[in-house]
Length: 177
Image 1 (cartoon, rainbow, N blue to C red):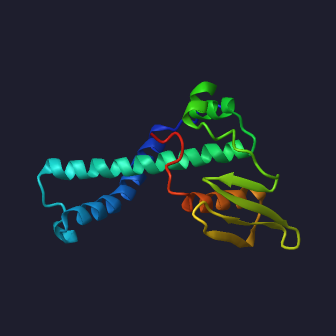
Image 2: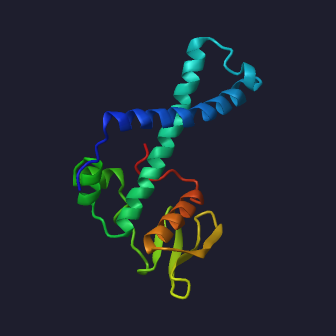
Image 3: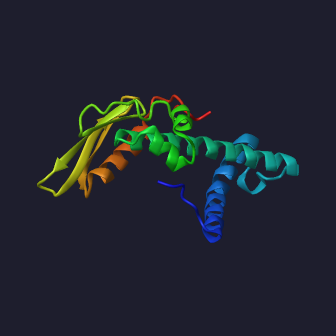
C-alpha cells in the first residue's frame, strides 16, 4: 500500500471542511473561556482570539491522533502487521511499532471478536437477517450493541470500533503524544 495523495482541489475542500467544523467548536470553547454571550465572544485583542483558535486546533489534533490510533488498532486486529501500518502512514515498520506499540500485539480472542480501547465486542453473523450485528462492553463498563444487522462483518466491526472508542477507559491511546 502506498501513501494516499490528494489533489490540490481535494486539499482545498478538506481545508474548508475542517475550518467549517472548527468554527462552531472554537466559538463554543471561546464563549466558555470568556463567559461572554455569543455575539461578543470574539471581543478581544486579535492575539487572544488567534490563540483561542490555535488552542482549539490542538483539541482537533488530539482527536485525530486518537482516531488514527483506533484505525491502526483496527487494521492490526484484522491481521495487518507493522510493515503494512508503516506503509499506509508513510513511515518505516519500526516507526509504526513506535507510534502504535499495541496495534499489532493485541490478540483477537476469537475470529468473531475485537479488543480495542480496553473493551471487547463480539461480531455475530445473523444468517436469518442476512447480515452482521455486534454486542460488547467498553472499557468504562458501558454495554451496547447493534440489534439491526450490518451488511458486512467489516461494517459491523467499524460501528463496534466507534462504540469502543467512545467508551474507552479515558486514558489517552498509545502514540498520541
